[in-house]
Length: 114
Image (cartoon, rainbow, N blue to C red; front, side, top):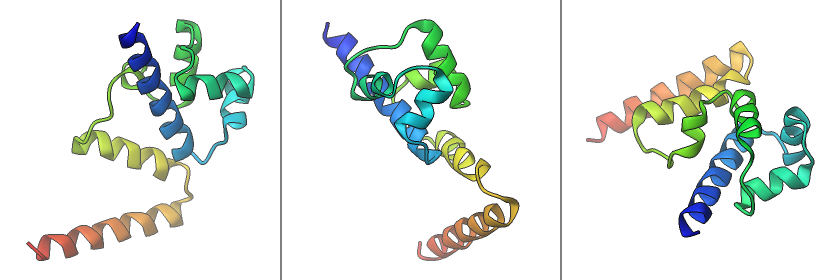
């Protein structure tokens, strides 16, 4: 039972993180998935687990693999780059260029401090 709670909490946190990265409300995600807002809330709180069909639908909508939803958050640069990519995808070209330039300048600055 404990591993089920752990899985539900981990999955819920991942869904919430990816939803928030898109600046979506629970209602926004619920509409896209075709469930009640309360259902998304229960998933994110780890109170319930989605069915496999619903999990696949959520992963498709959030543009991540089902496996990524089920794994723990990673601090690996490639995984973090994927998250940045999700955020950038929702910006127009000018704003993406602005953010990328800020990241490049920040990284250049931090490398100089070493």
